[in-house]
Image (tube, rainbow, N blue to C red; front, side, top):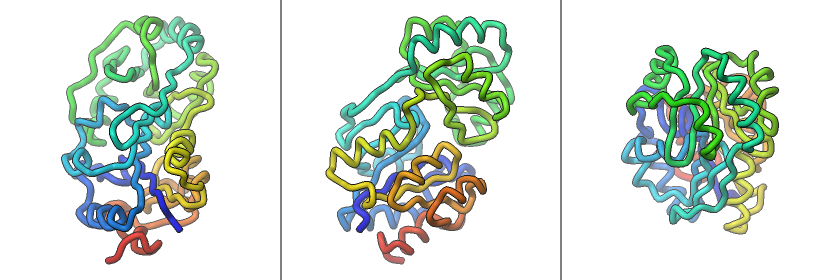
Amino acid sequence: MIKAVFLDIDGTLIRFDTHEIPDSALKVLHQAKEKGIRLFIASGRPPIQMSLLCESFRTFPWDGKVLLNGQYCLDEKGQVMHQEPLPMSAMEKLVPWLMDKQFNCAFYELDYAYDIHFNQDYYNYLKEIGHTERMLPVEDVHRALSHETYQICPYIPAEEDPEFISHAPGCKSARWTPAFADIIPEDGGKPEGVKRMLAKYGIAREECMAFGDGANDITMLQYAGIGVAMGNANDNVKAAADYVTAPIDQDGLAKAFVHFHLATE
């Protein structure tokens, strides 16, 4: 019996084109809540972006949020359950290396975010996926040596991930898009946040489902009792899932909830 569902945001819960939760998805989410199923967010987004999402997302009674790919977890009251920044030893090696690089990186703290270079392609991409906030301020990369950083998003192709990680010991890539990588602690990832939520509510791994569409969702889909890939996901994500539903813009979330009897049509 499924008692908890973990949902990625972009491309899973919220559409890229409308930046809204489909009405069909909202309907089944409320039905699942009424049945006593706990609903959680599991996203790579930082906490400072939650207020920028659509009203239906902000007002929904989530049971908790796994943010920054598992590095920052909040319970239903917004209280911090877990937080783990990137190791400062990684910053000490990475910062000097980045001084000579021209590609952009976004650095995410808990209450602040900044870029180390302006990149028009990066800005255009953010607008495309619904980051309609103003461009992040450009800061000196040395800020990372005096402030806790929870995630870095270098705007580099996947084949350059290994070189980046070689200059960030204790870190790994949780890439979900070809455009940029999510750099997180080596022992991090969405499953770590999922584990903490399940432990808090006394729910077994086999009693949870997870939905996702990006490569950073793969380990979460594999960890959950049932992993569901959206129809708009890449083939590697679909291969890691137990079930593949329709794309987000074809009521994929609602169809999966009905298929697994979490809601009715």
